[in-house]
Image 1 (cartoon, rainbow, N blue to C red):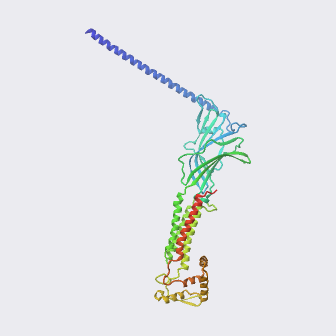
Image 2: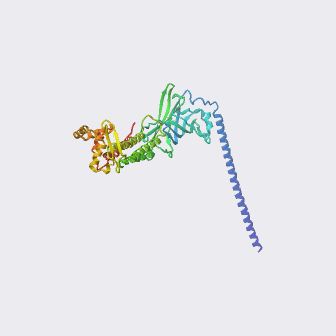
Length: 484
């Protein structure tokens, strides 16, 4: 019994000893790992501190003896400025000011060996915008600019990246407002080409040369409300003036105007208004107030639309495509009104049904070249028999003398050419020939009264056909044909 208890107690002691040994070993390993990690962190911190001190020392002594007023390599090779532009947004485009605006990242690269440095494991570092004020930089400007600005919220949007060989990369965020000459003869089917010229304000090609490093890029999300972006052309050129030869970068942004807005807001309403003016051809010619009011209303409506769409346009000395369209619409509406004047004067020969135009009783003396000392008796013609009414009609309209009437009838009988008759009738209507009107009065049919005028019947076909032909030529010429 005693030996068994002794063996059990020995086993328990040995287990406790092994547990303590394992625990001490684990603690030792954890302590070793902690010491190693601490030493590594200490080394990293010391390395970062040393690297920061090295960079600070380089920057502190980088500009020693540096003169920012002198270009790099003065007296030697000229400086090459590699330029790049990224367009982030564009608009608005003003036809009245002939200008456009866009927000760009303007990037320039050049080499200044005076800023070269050596640091282990460091080839370049980025500096704040304050460093830009202490180094030489090309005095680039936008030749056709108007009111450009640099963004300063929340800090000046510019930075410099300096490489160990002295290469400098500078990027600035700008809003550029530049002139954009436009030819509005095809407005609103026109296309604009907005240029941007970049050059040096004082350095000639002997000291500085610009060149494009990459193509001008546009952010994929850039859209315009009234224009569609087209291709972008860029080139390097040199121009001479009295001060020497200057290097210039050119960018041409092609824009095409979206016609959908003008079709919905201008063209379609004008089409409807012009078509409304043709309704008068189907209105009885006795309804003078209705036809005159319809003609005047359509003219005023088209004029109001024209004044509205011209508000944002400059006062150019030539007619735009929209001016041509609006003026033609007004001409057709005025022609419809004039057409009724001709119908009313030359074909409305009998009084309207229900009585005379002016129901008055009595006698009136009419004086004139042909009707001197003749009396006209105004009575109710509807109450008279047909033969007496015809005689009274001839008496009231005072027919010309038999000799004049005979000569007119002979002239009309001898004239068999339809075209000539139409031309003569048009001329007589235009000059207001009283003899021609009397001849039409005498030839009127008292039984039929004021039937549908032949002028109205011709106008119902002539106006829509000619207006449709005009629109066909208009859209083909302005929308599809390319003009230089």
